[in-house]
Amino acid sequence: MLIPVAIFLYAFYGFLVFWVVMSFIALFHLMTFGIKNMVTFFAASIYIVISVLVITTTFTSMQPIEWQTPINELPNIDISAPLS
Amino acid sequence: MLDIYRIPNQLPDEKVITVLRRDTFVLFNRTMLFLLLFAILGIAAFIITNFIPGLLTDAYQPILLLAGSAYFLFIWLFYFFSFIDYYLDTWIITNERIINIEQNGFFSRTISEERLFRVQDVTSEVKGFWPTIWRFGDVFIQTAGEKQRFHFEQVPHPDMVRDTIIRLAEQDREREAGVLKQSEILNQMNE
Image: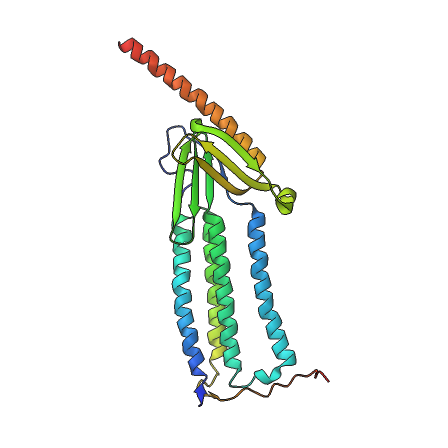
């Protein structure tokens, strides 16, 4: 059976939804119960900036991908240093 | 959001003496774990690029990209969670009270407080190699209140914290005794 790569894209989207919900909960806790100081805002900002960077990079790298490419078998794994 | 300069139910003339968290060594440990997990991603990328280039086909490259991205986002979230767990556990010592704020997971938070004059016994404990080297440990505070024992976990310089609490408790007891004497005098005068 030929499975399109897109299956993994949908799984990734599912993970991303879960991740965004958990991130909101974490940020909500930090901003609600944290101490009102620079560390709290700095930590929240760093988390958001790095997350946005990673997600943007992922989506940019995904643009040229043909998602209907099928996966039907394992590739020929060419290990450059054979055991023998 | 908690404002250190305006703590909850602040008493008149109450001043914050110190705000304690776990020692930074605890955060350092968690950061090291995150960096180790991040390094695994780098090592995997290096091995695949150099030794298993067969995986970098049109069909498998997208899967690796998504898996790598999901892995990073997961460990990043995990690290952020552990930072919040570290950051939200706070112990505040004022000249009149000790306040214990503990975050147990994401949906459980405990805030307790006790007046210093009710403190009966304070014990500091440093156990293990790293706590001895980095000078952090636990402080147990026995009180006469409902919550019998306050536990400051892995705080820096526990001996100094113990001394501070004992000193402040004595001062608070003296102040309380003074207030009682004053009220007794006022009562007698009224009678």
